[in-house]
Length: 412
Length: 83
Image (tube, rainbow over the protein chains, first blue to last red):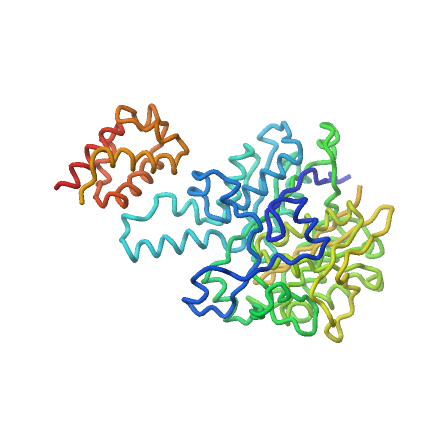
């Protein structure tokens, strides 16, 4: 009998709020966290995109000054989310050798790296801060979280673009199942609202340029969608073996019942248009959880709002869930948060866990007309109740490079 | 314009405060960076880099080991300004 892995703590800082309660409330209210950028560099560099999903509560308001100086923003966000998740789990007394950390990032410390290069060019090598490399490395957020909680069973950093945060959850599940740890702090983080990634994504025509309507720009599956909206933030969950959680009387949100990973082996950026890889991940997750597609009542879709991606996912879901897809409530929460890249899969796992616990599917906003041929039951405008009894939900996350991750969350 | 010793002490205290969170009034000339202020070698290099910028001086890496106390740093920066 495989070890059952449950969720005992949640934490986030996101464009919708500085914690889980405010973020979930914002999502259920159908609020957009996307706003115009006030940075002078938007105009200076003639960026074609002038809005993003910036944190609702700046990390500098929560962390100490020395902490913000020593951590890249990507690590700062992870630290804020991890502290909330750890406290939410009851700050468990656990042997550090049985405690692991898996915190992902898609891009890493882009601010630190490019600031340091600017400094070298303007003032020479002497002015570069000694901690530049430890700050910019993508494993820095995970390492800081491990320092925070004293994790010695291993600290890991999946880097799989926009699937990173979900891959971290999957890796944490595997650590517990294989007996390496009793508790694993998992999550993802990103702080890439910086001119360089914005310029690059815009050049790929992956970003929405609806500058006259930031809050209405992310419109997954809509016929007028024109790209994703950059977001930032972090989501962190405390995963625990059911046995360990029960022994300490921990409150349990839900079970992470199945993980499915696959790859497209198709292209460095766009998904395989056949959706074969995505379907494979969904099917693998359902099989791993030992649930049938009939048991799935809700999907938090990857759904970034790009013209290419959404159609592929909709078709893959339709095939992955078979005839039951008609009865699955699909939510696309990036319509409200923007796309947190390496943080997205983790924040959306939190949304999926809360949807299962509260039995409510969050809404998708900004959708007025589904693109013809997209055959899914999208939850639009307002939240939708989910059925009673034991239910299961899927969280999808896909990334550049052909990474596909699907997670099955089951009610307890 | 050269900074006075008092300015340099106050400036160093600000840097140490930002980097470590120690209160500025604990950064006194007789305090040892390592024994009293608990500043490790990496933080010391950061503080030195920030001090070079703030006071527009050069503090060679091989000199840093000789800066045992806050007072040593104030003296070194004062002299480096004058040279």
